[in-house]
Length: 345
Image (tube, rainbow, N blue to C red; front, side, top):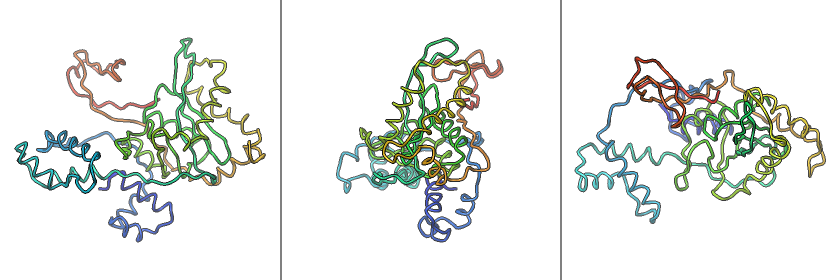
């Protein structure tokens, strides 16, 4: 079974025009396996049903992680190999497990790689940029500060926003899903600000969240991540974030149902679309039709934006989300682990 990173790599190669036989040569994967993932329509996460058995390596993983993190400060030719890690565990920490466990863990830690490429100064139709902004809203009469996800299209300068309570992977996936459905397609490439909401950066590597990785495989788009403190790499969306705050959220909006508000918010781009592009002097709406022609086709099944995790209920059978929100299950679950699915809906 391939990892989501491998599946996305296969999909990226296929979207770039590679045949299945060529993808097999580049990745080493069996053509039947490649064909299976290329034809798979639904990558929504499923509730976990198999509990992994504890590994003899588990107590030593923080030690290994610290060694690999320290390697980043030193010359690459003096980084730990799997064999050196194994030898040090045996000599210094009385490790009694097998070498294969160590080797597999090291390989897993180093498997995440990010495509590095210069961003285009002249944009073709299709690609989009993604970022979050924040603004105040009156929700059910109460003033609160919320985040809004914005997707802009540099070619046409059109853009769309959706309001959420945070910047989690669930928020990103739900916002993108709703925008994709509204515009009728999927941008072939999305540029993100330093993995905001979709993962975390460790050194030079971006570790995508499991949910976003599945979402990306489901909709077949490619991603690029800006370098830290390099906002100019996504200047179009940063300007769009500011523009939307000044034009969509002034005066401070009032709503009671955030989903209904977000639906109306998508159509408010039409006013901007009627204006002329600041350089091309062509209506933004006409330019966006070129963007639309370059979009990927929506999958037959929409993605189910849901993250599953095991949580322990308290003595009343309640579970606590995000350290402040309590939800009831049933008294029989008191002090038991329960499977919780969380969404933005």
